[in-house]
Length: 274
Image (tube, rainbow, N blue to C red; front, side, top):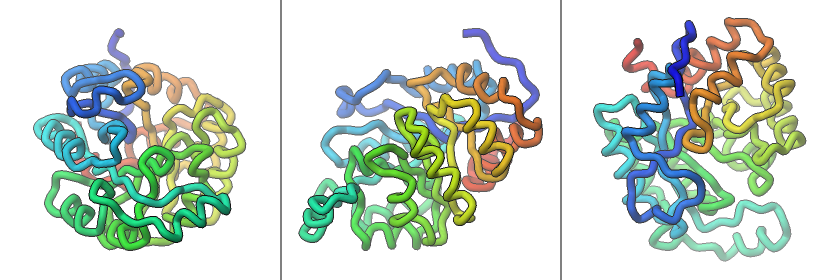
């Protein structure tokens, strides 16, 4: 694809990186570090938040370390993906199962969180409770103590309301992907937008939000709380950037979503400004 020309500094808070052969069965298109870096360059994206795909086994130590290793000397900021034993559902059955849920060897525990938070290899955490399960309360307490932002997959299996109950109010930024409504769930996205009024530590990323009216509403009503996320490699960063560039919103709001807001939530994105 042709390189985009625009006057914005753009950072991307949502890119999946495949570097571990053990995740060869992961759903969706695969992309290696070299190809992702090339696609980002084509879109004028100077830095990107990256995390491993689902492994299917729930264990992410190997995949997380591989992503962190391949982020060195590249414009990538690595997140540690965490899995847990709890069912994120709100049904009676889920609540009953969670009463006896115990952390297994492949689930993240407090010691794993402390290990990931030490040093500068990882700059935040990635949760997808619908796929990986929800970490237990002790582990989430360790996440809060680490003080790093939490990026959480938003969808019908883990709605914005569920995310608010479990994650918000812990003193760390929480970034909900897909405006909390994946796939294309307007009701979920509207719920997430409503939560912005009541939670200062809650942010939304634009990945896979295909409704122009909701994107424009969020950028106009909450210009400090929207972060650009491409969703690469499912979406080429060129396409994702163009989706925002063609919105009818003030240029300042667009610049905040592309750069200022992500850098405020995750300072490592601003470490090598162009």
